[in-house]
Length: 599
Picture 1 (cartoon, rainbow, N blue to C red):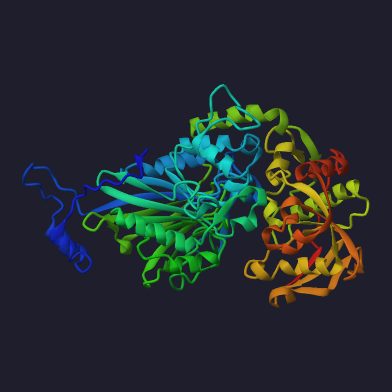
Picture 2 (picture 1 turned 180 degrees about the vertical axis):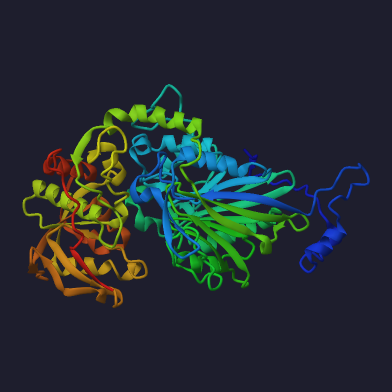
């Protein structure tokens, strides 16, 4: 594993005779100025060549997916030469380890970095143990550095600090006779400040060194992390602008003599194609991608040489012009360990900077056709043994796959139905339920994942779908407020990237995507049990605690009254599946027809 240090070594080889001409001379001319076989006349030793390729391997949004993800979460789409596409099974740290280790062979200068959300919203094997298994796996993967993501704050800053520094969980204790040592790699949180001290809660940057080559890394999460994490998770923290923060620390690194800089940003974009190998620069640089990362990339200082991004779970390798108009590489490797990005950064020893014109990058599939890494197999087996008594318990039966994809996902519909049923046990007057799409982390697959049999839903599979430990909350809203909630799906902070809530079966309406903003909700079409919404009437609504706190930009949901807190959301799903399915009468996937979408 490359040496890790933030202390700067002031002793660097300085090529004064050619530095002034470095920006103008061609590679051939500079090679002539210092031939590859040149020797130090004092010692007779070969001088290093001017250029050194540095391999940057990166991935993002692993979310504790140690085992191969199932269903669509475990596949990628590949664009074929004839314009057709095919899907490839991908992911699983046993395979990711093999791919990364193979990629490093022959690359003496190799560094591995990540773009956040390594933990949080994790399957049972990791989430049950507060993500200690994932940190252990990342250590074995020889991860060098990562930014924090929003999910690193799911359990708060103190728990994030424990994942970094080690120690037993404050309530669950230790899971073995060995003390949890924490991450071997630094988590970077340049734009996450302690409200009291005004200082970053973790290191803002880190410098990778190999002999005379130095590359600085700055890590940030999206500024809107408080909008996508529970209020308790970000209590006492302040999140600063991504661009301002990166530019600030780029100047700090430059003053320390570090000219080669990579930003790790847990914010991303949406490519024009869902294929991982889509040409994002067709017809021109940056033309094939949209979303927040575009403006961020266009405003980050040109001194930053490449951006490793995440958050949107999309796959892309794009060049987006920096403020000087020069193209700069921006990458994302989808999610769940299905891809990794291999980027070649050509380091110029004369300037200490990256020769940006030579940067190359591509995403690669973590196929499952390679041998499994034995150390990862052992790790998974060890933690699965601890989880098995809980995870293998059958909680229900399904007749077919229940996917989590689409504007209205069948899995989200099922969760909303479960929460309405739970709400009515708490209060028979509960009228409807709404579920946020980001809280639906996976679907349910009919095919058996282990020995449980086809169609059997285990607790571990349910945990993978809903891993957040939110509670089901009941609140009262007026009909006018309910309409406003629906409009907030497609307006305000959600105007650019709509967040369509999943409704219980008794709520229906039309979503007209040909219109803009709040007008996308056809108000006259909204029906509850077939009746129009009365703006003055009171409606009892079940949501999870994240939404009840106004999360995901639904500020109106944070204004409900007559609050009642129920059980955790996974328990509600377990109860619903157990009560409504059996081996002889499995539950069918909900028909996603509650929202009529006009395009």
